[in-house]
Amino acid sequence: MLAKTIIIPAKGRAEVIEEELDTSNLQPNEAVIQAEASMISAGTELSRVFEIKKGFSYPVRPGYSAVGKILAKGSDLTDLQIGDRVFYTGPHTSLCRFSRGTRTQGPMIFKLPEGISSQDGTLITQAMVAISGVNSVEVRLGDRIGVFGMGLIGLLAAIMLKKLGAEVVAIDPVTVRCEHARQMGIMQLLDCPPQEQLAQIQARFGGLDAAVDVTGSARAIETAVLACKKYGQVALLGTPRAACTLDVTPMLSAIHMRMLRVTGAFNSLEPVFESEGMRLNVQRNFGTICDMILSRELPVSWLISHVVSPEEVERAYHGLMYKPELYRCVVIDWTN
Image (cartoon, rainbow, N blue to C red; front, side, top):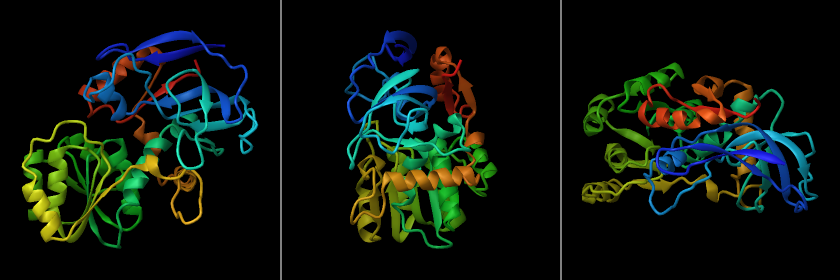
């Protein structure tokens, strides 16, 4: 079967290639999926498209969040049927031979509930990243929690924290991104330059009870730590990709002297299915997010700013990189 696939052949480039996909002799944990939509990750994919992340080589096959229809499946996928519309963590390709991971870790595939569109369903991966950061913080009613970075994951995390009863402060140097947060019901906004954020937080709020960093920026992490009050919490949800050149002594001193709790939030290490002794798992998070989408508590349709064809992906990458005020989230339409 012929598949159209997006590859990154070199820095700043994206191409669509056609290749033959072997769909014979499926393994018990495999499925053949015809894609309907896939989402571009502004973090992971841009770090490779623009060579921010080091230690990899071109070409790269990007993408990890898609929705499609099962054309064939192996015997172990007993919870799925041929014809089911599914969410899966597959690449940007029109046709995918997908292998489900183990019970504890690996590629995910779940049946998508009726009522969630294919485009909306592609945002589930980012919502699951956000929920891992939210679950890393012990939220009490009225806690003032700063979320650093109002990209897609930051917006989703802010919405979830507000639902839990926190007073959320949306922090991003790009004014229009803070405006996006306001449109999501987050009323405390901080859109000053990074070097002014700590002073502004202390002047306006007297500090934070907790912080969630979605940027991975060393400066943002430092501000998040220094802004927290005694016994505060910091969740590190963003992936650091650039070298840290800061003097970390003030940050380490604050962690020590204020007895702060700093936690890494990395959802890929959570078990996929429920297992004994584990309260949180990917399958439970998937159900929670689907319920929030269906109830419109997560306004994912609004978060999608652009829907593009596979041939328009290179332009979308440049828009996400250089015009973040206009590009919130880009979804690729594979149906045409």
